Amino acid sequence: MSSEQKHPLHPGDWQDSAPGDEPEDSPGHWIGSYLIGLSLATVLTIASFWIASAHPIWGPALPVALIVLAIAQMGVHLVFFLHVTTGPDNTNNVLALAFGVLVVGLIVLGSIWIMDHLSQNLMTMDQMPPM
Amino acid sequence: MTDVSFPASMEAIRRRRKDPDQSGHGGHGPNAPVPGTGHGESGPASKRIIVGYGFWIFLLSDIVMFACFFATFAVLRNATAGGPTIKDIVDIPRVEWETACLLLSSFTCGLSFAATNARNLFWTQVFLVVTGLLGLAFVLLELQEFVGLASRGIVPQRSGFLTAFFSLVGTHGLHVTVGGLWLATMLAQVQVKGFRQEIVHRLICFNLFWHALDIVWVGIFTIVYLLGSIA
Image 1 (cartoon, helix red, strand yellow):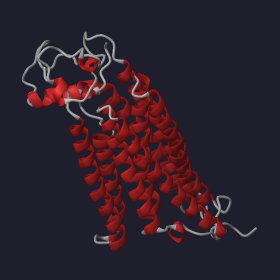
Image 2: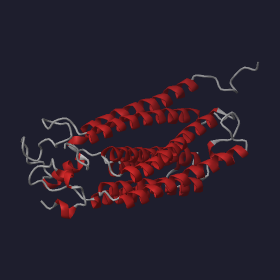
Image 3: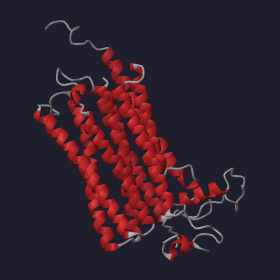
Image 4: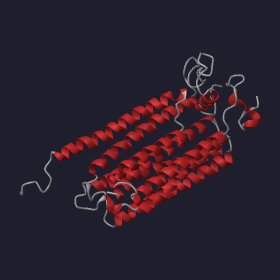
């Protein structure tokens, strides 16, 4: 195997790889992944700030566009920075993430939904009879 | 030795590249369990996988906590009690700088981890220091913002909206501060102890933490600042 030439790793690091297995990706793979992540995140960030300042689209659609861009950027961070993949070793991580997203969704959307209905059913200050 | 220094996901990615259509089904083919991941009959997961998974669970619980602050902010956004509204306190150029600092620091943090994987002490330390300085710049920008707001009488006690604003943004700033302290101790540990297994595990956890902070910041600059600026 040519792992010593390709990778500046300690010799013991690959003792458990099977015969014929190629040594793992070099640090270049990581740097490439971070570079892709940085460029995508930069593009999405600039798009967000530009949309918010220049108002290039229909006004009421602005919040939706911003939230979509934010979710897209969170996805970019998860894939290229945190390296959450669909690989077999990542099943547990992805399941935990899915549960986390479920809880976050319940908390945020549930709170907004409930509190909005609550405040709709309450009298506002100007509806209140003078005391 | 069951512990590999690269994440086992790399092995999975390599297999996917070799066999993109997953045509090689069967126990001993490319879909055989990756050693060290805790799947199939390949034995227990390596310590690295378990450490990363445990820290990932902690991060998700941290994100759930942030979700509570986000929900509070969304509900109390208009509860200004006659005080300043969100539009009055948003300072977009500052947020742009803060975002740039944090995004770049996330990137340099990743570069330091790539250097860690190559067992390169010098570049690990250099990129960790750069990450720390960018994080420090972020915290200082945010402190300056809070001090400026306070000098205009905009304090958490003023209204429900401001309480929610300062708790959400402040909790994130506190996380970055604590992450900076952690980073400082990691610099010392890497320098003194080298790339021992447990040190590398701590570096992995620190990386996850720092990237997760950036994810939370994406939520903050969108929900709080950008949506506030167009309110």
